[in-house]
Length: 351
Length: 278
Image 1 (cartoon, rainbow over the protein chains, first blue to last red):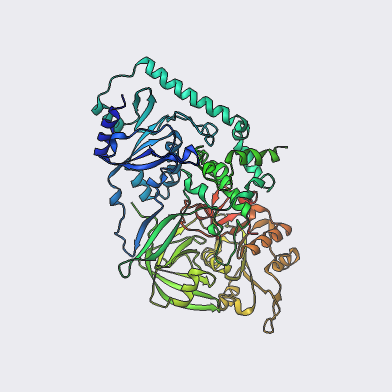
Image 2: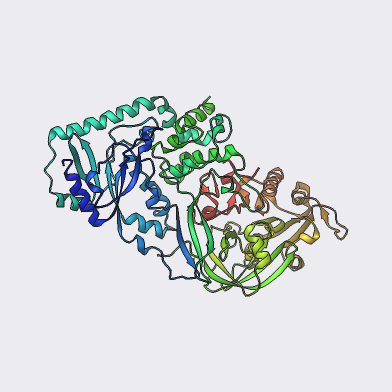
């Protein structure tokens, strides 16, 4: 598919519903090159100059299934339901492998728990059309290879785009995707184009392997070590620069902790209940009435995040609650690198 | 599909003052709800918020339940100060697994409560009374700060007069009206005291609920007296928000207290961090 045909694809996507795409900003941020790709809505008038970025967006896509704040109940009104506005399809464009990997992880909590299924999450999740793309380069904070993912999507997408010279290779991963592909009626990819695609993929994998080679060993056995490293505070000094700002949990594509809060509604005798993002990095997260707190110390809160990601979640669901996107590293005010935390905390116990 | 975050309407039908800081609310349910002893409810004060409480009444009643609440935080302050008979509250639940009553068959049950922690245990006590023929004996050990702070005062005698039940009380500091034992609740769990009241340690389960700091020392004292970790059940009623194992704040190790508990066997949780509050 040539560059100009991307416009046709976006046109077709717009017929499905609103399109949100990770977009490269025109003015490069002077801070770092990673912070210039943002998720923006694409409309008819802005679609002409759209290009799929070669790297993940600065913000994450989890807010499309778990908005920062939304109403979950209007009590006492049993028939009330807030899910009709999510009936319409939403199209997400430009997700990378680390973004798409977050959905199966969130599904385990909100959909695959047989006792309690979150109806809001279910509806939102089913209304998504996912258009992914390969990474064409990686940044310092990337470590998807350590978590067992590749820098290109392998499953879970409706359509995947692989950038090649002068255009894209397009692949469908679902029925919806095949339908869109048929509408576009594109020629088969040529052999040299597929070669070029694979070459780019190998190049990025190589870059990742190189920059993360020193952490490889710690990550390969992080589950075994995780259960041991949490017993002592030794090796966790790296967390001393944490200021409990919760940036890491907010930008994380798989951190889903939330809280419910109530307040009086606009109509008399109606009360609204909202679900809002919360963070385990806040002191009040587990604090009980009366002031007792099982995770009272700062280091206990800091450790809890790693404990949940690499031990608790793995024990319960068999996967790590991390996709290696590196957003937490990029956004940390205390310059804490998750890879260094894991490599630093575990060898202490290894002796 | 059911909205798991929706609270059903309920009406306060009676309020009983147990102590100056503890009240028991009798709540009439508009929708029938049955709970097992030890399971908890999310009680919401309209427009203020919700908090987890374990009912203190017998689990048999599907139309009404009693919840015993101590005035100690944002929501309980409103409950104590503003909520009157006839007011509407919201209820969500029941959540959790509750006490393993089947396991308790043929065993002696040592119930250890502290302060308002007797509330969930009262529900267990009534559940055990309902199946008393299967239970060997029930020992109730209860510690409160002072005679004024004891909840369910008028029921101890009724319990004591039943067959197979022994009630042991203690208060933290000497008091002029108090003739019984003085000391923390752990003084009722010394080996020689347990022998004196006739607890068959090998053939019993201990169930405890109270402030976390009490649970910690109760557990250590029980282990010292010869209980095995498998024989100790703790009601870890921590802060919970969703109640359905999603919001991830109430966990110990791989367990979510709201889904797998809140009554945990000490053997399951003892090796994980954050077992007791510091």
